Structures are given as C-alpha cells and as structure tokens.
Image 1 (spheres, rainbow, N blue to C red):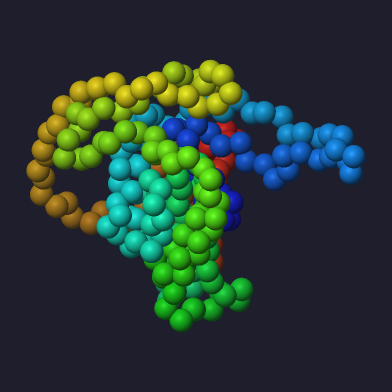
Image 2: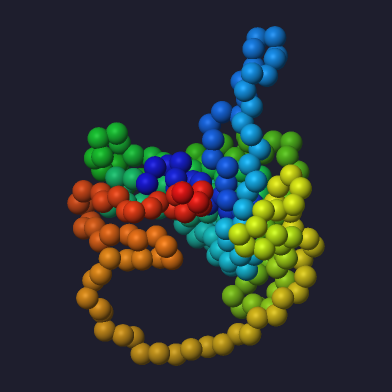
Length: 231
C-alpha cells in the first residue's frame, strides 16, 4: 500500500463515516486570479455505519491517551494507530482529528533497517509538531461518534442523516445531536480452537493473498482505497 492509500483509509473515521474525495489539485488560477480549473465537489457516500465509527474512534483514541502514541497528544481529541515493520524498516503513525487526517512514515529509501525507530517515536513526534501548526486558530471539535466505550455499549452515538450507501445532505457529512441507541450486551465464552490450516485471508469484499514475512509483496485484487472509492 502507498502512504496515500493508508492515510485515506482513516478519513471515514474522522469525518463520520463518509468516503473521501482523494485528489491533488483543488484549484488552478492565473496570475491575475482568474480560475481556470477547480476540482468538482464530490458527493461523498456513507461507507461506514455510525456505530462502527463510534467504536473505532473509541478504540483508536486510546492509542494516544494511553497507548503507543502518547507523544502525539497535542490537546485536541485525536485518534490513530502506530505501526512498525520487521527490524524497524518502516515506522508509521496515521492519526486524525475531526479537522485533519495525517500520515507519517519514517524509513530508509533502500529498505534497510533503521536504528530501532518505532511508530510511537519519530513518526508520532513529527505528527504532533505538524498537527500543532495545522490546528492553530482552529476551534477544537470532538471526534464523531460520541463517547462510546466497550464497558457501556448503551451510550449515545450520533444518528446520521443519510443511511449507508446514500449521499449526505447539504455540503458534506452532517450528523444530528447524539441520541441514545440501546444495544444488548452479552458475554460469550468458548474454548480456544486449534490453529486451522493457513488460507488466504478475506475481509468483506477484499481478498488478500497469503504472503511470507520479508518476502516479495503481493498485490491483492483490491486495495482499501479501491473499496472506499468504489472502484
């Protein structure tokens, strides 16, 4: 996956569950200020349910407040995930606020191991410094999803104006004030099953082939970005 694909996959958690409009150029003007090109405004469809957004944001907030990305905390409600590959060849932190999603990668161009860089060290620090500057003068806003926690699954979550697969009304993702949604809690106990024979993994409509650690990368039929963009 490219840094763009990986970072774009986190955007729906930051905007309330809507497909991102990935593009590089927003507007082109002449020196006199005449607009000669402007990226058309996309109609972003919902791709993640409000409940899933709530749970994911509650989980990934813990990465910053009490997990491996403590160095990323900068005063805004934020969430994300650190990542470190074998022998510290790659060190990542992908994080977001309700205002901005940012991905940071550290590594050597030749793929050689770094000197024990982890996702929670240099990437988290770089993310922190960038986000502090990017949020200067921006009003603090909570992440979508309310205050869902696994210990209290009956807490309120925002109810979307547009169901899954439909486009939001107005200029972009809009949610109403949180309303209580009750979900039954249950505990299931089961014996640990024997390890099954390894097979290619599949998540939803994304088929991911088996790959050996340190081997050559194998491109799947679809990337996460393909799914989010409906390709």
